[in-house]
Image (tube, rainbow over all chains, first blue to last red; front, side, top):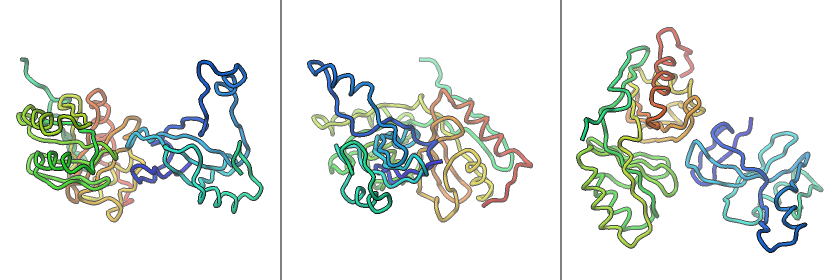
Length: 109
Length: 190
């Protein structure tokens, strides 16, 4: 059971109040893009054992989307942050580096 | 126009706590920039209260003003005042990004009353929320999950809580609450 804090309404709740929205920080490749890029955007997903970044929606609460960084192995939640960004905040990355030395996830490390 | 009926026809049941459907209330869902002075001024003039803070509810005679999300409020008032309120919102906020929708007959409003600990326990059985008196008190509102459906709960005073849910799930919510409030169901947590 994950305990997530919604950065929009400040509620800390268990995961049944939320709904997972899949991998975070995907860049969309739409019409006119190369086939490889479009395929990657549609199908290629990270499936890490360890640090992972996801989108979540506070579906039974304020209804807003946000991001969460967590560990798929221990279910530890490193932190949550607003949806209006293309990369995690630096202090959160520093916190993860501290807890999981040597981790990497796509372009982040 | 035909008579307006509340979703549960004013049903009530006494168990460890009293669960009852409230009389029909006028309700308006409002979206906009809550920090905007014009928006706040219009809304508070209609509710007769101050602006609610994050996850707070302002109570007034016959109504309330509830914080529902960072850009959403719920305005509750007597049903006959809704049309005038919508006109006022439309004129005051014309040209400004906002949304006002009447949801009077789209929601069900219930009240739980009785011994404070028993009311908190009844709600706590169904919602993943900490209802300890220090964590959830008068003036607090929380949108969450009631058993399997979305709902909002607020505290008016110790032993007096309100619950609002979609009309389509009113019977489910009523059944869940009355079951949780049944005699012999004491847990003794709070």
